[in-house]
Image 1 (tube, one colour):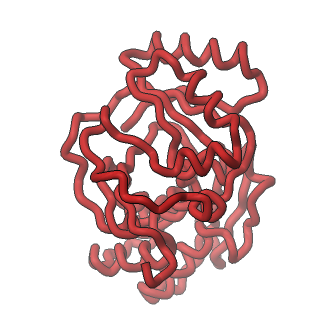
Image 2 (cartoon, rainbow, N blue to C red; image 1 turned 90 degrees about the vertical axis):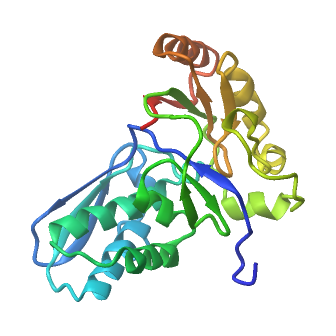
Amino acid sequence: MADGYHRIETIFAFCEEGDVVSVAEADELSLAVSGPFGHELSSGEDNLAMLAARSLAAMAGVDRGAALTLEKRLPVSAGLGGGSADAGAVLRLLRRWWGIAPAEAQLHALAAGLGADVPACLWSRPARGEGRGDRLQPWTGEDLAGTPVLLVNPGTPLATSAVFAGWSGGDLGPLEALEASRNDLEPAAVALVPEIADALVALAGARLARMSGSGATCFGLYEDEAARDAAADRVREAHPYWWQLSTRLC
C-alpha cells in the first residue's frame, strides 16, 4: 500500500489475561511501567500508551493530568499486539476518567493514526480486519467467548518489519472459517525463529493451533480447560524456559 502498510485479512480475538492499565489523579500526564516485562519498555513519550494519552488529550482539548500505570505482563515483540492493546486500553480508560465523549468515527481515526491494530484493540471484541487491519467488521463466525487458550513463546523477540520483509506477498486466497484459517506470515517467521515450528508441535492436541500475528507467540484453542492445562504441563516439562499463559478468550 502507498502508506507502507500491507493489505491484509486478519481475525482479532482477545484473552481474559494480559497487560493491565490503571489511572490515578495527577496534575500532569505521566506513565509508569512495571511488571515482568516492564524493563523492556520505555515510560517516555515513545511508549504507544503515552502517545495515545497525549493524542486523546489534544483531540478533546483536555487540560487535566492523569497518572497512568502499565503493568506489562505480556512479552514484547511477541506478535500479541500488546502495545496496540495498551494504547486501546488507555483510550477507553481516559475517555471515562476525563468524562469525555468523542464521536466514534473521530476516536477510530485517532486510533488508526497510532497504529494499524489499535482500532481493533480500542473496539476490544472479536473482529475481522481488512485493509491495514483497521477496516473492521464484527466477527460473525463461531462464538469464541470462554474458549480455553494456551499461549506459548520460545523467548525470542521478533520484529514485525523483519517478518513482513521475508513474506512472499502472495495472495493465497480469502480468510474463511476459523478452523480453516492460516497464517501466511508463518514461513517467514519460522525462517527467522525456527523454534516457532517447535511451539506449534508442542501445542498438539489443540483443536486449532496457529502462530499469533507476526510471531513468535503461538496459541492453541482447546475443547476444555483440562485439555489446555494438560498441554501446559507438557510444554512446561519439555520447554521450562518458554513463556506461557493459560487463559480464555473473551
